[in-house]
Length: 417
Image (cartoon, rainbow, N blue to C red; front, side, top):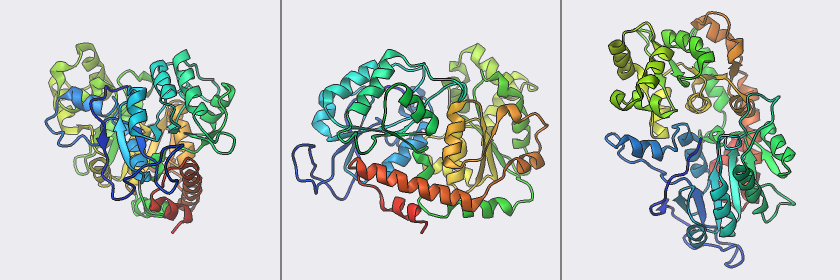
């Protein structure tokens, strides 16, 4: 989940054109709009020795956020400045002509964006939300929203100056759009996650299939680790970890959330609540002593703070599998196979709308072996590429309709060449 981060100063993204800007009611339409992207830290810089709190705030409390934020910023060629979610209306109005919000699973009872709704409304600027998702236990359940988050979604929809002709909310799929419709918030476009277009080349499915089909069985396996409180997936993770710890083809256990897991990945054991640390131990390698568990964390547990390094590492693995959609999706974008273990409507919707292979956690009842994992994945490269091209075309139209200048490679993906 994205978190509010206190703003210091806006951060410019370097650009080579479009230095002048168009106000909605002012300048010549030939000039690109100035975009305020609501994400404070586009680059964490030399983060190797950074304090944990700086890193944790910089990733919005979940490393997976980096995937879709990086994607969106690569998709837009307008002049861009970055701001926090808590930026004032005056700050936004003075620095931008349009606001872009990289979204995650904000639509759930776990959020309250009342203050942000007020700032967005007072800014008077059009707002474009990209990748908005609803979070519920399953498709059979409706979402529950706080009054503040409901107001936030209403303000975004109402800011669309062309609401009768084109949407300004790009959702993760039909379920999220249907939930917005039930709330009286019409005009959203079901699309998927923008990280679907992180790899800039067409024909991605064929490349994934070529690499995957060349293997009789996957050797090196990365686990997209879940959360120590997810008891229903614990035995699944125990089996995946055992497969991951191959002495000849070792993999890694990559974590994204929550704070305790990320601290453990950086060896900061003394700053973790003792009960949480005990639960992480039970969730991963309970047959090890406590000191052996800490050594295991240092050897196998990882967290990443920039997308290129993360993808480059996954490119060296045969398979990435686990409950974290974005951890798996990055492997797909790195031209390697991935399998998401879905646990709720959020992860299932993302997979269905981006073609990422998935299996419901409840269906993983058999002992997990490399042969079993190979048989679980039925990947049609041509169907994947057709789906991705169609999605890219709709996404391209969405950006253009909202007066955002798309990167040329999106057209190449949409055209399949």
